Image (cartoon, rainbow, N blue to C red; front, side):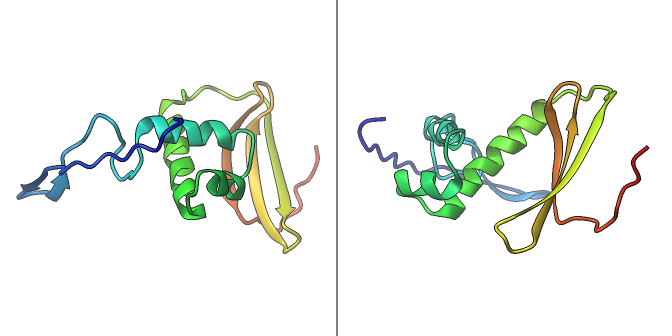
Length: 129
């Protein structure tokens, strides 16, 4: 990772009568990604310590490119997640960026794992029992 490496490959495309045109998968990258799997791994590792904007600046990428890397990583993680019964569920609605933008988080409080994050909030007050 100390030297810039540019892979140039003519990735074959195949035409299926049922599903249309598709690119053949390559061993060094995920479908839809412009980056190698190793580079995406580096970006995800850096995202554990910094926000999207900082990682984008350090890697000379756009915010959208880093967001795409993060989205693919989240999708992979969700695909690997096992569904297990939850005894204690935690729900939190919080605002950020001082602009009344909200996210709602749902977590398994027993295991300390996030189950779901959604944009927005319900505006409801939940009774405490």
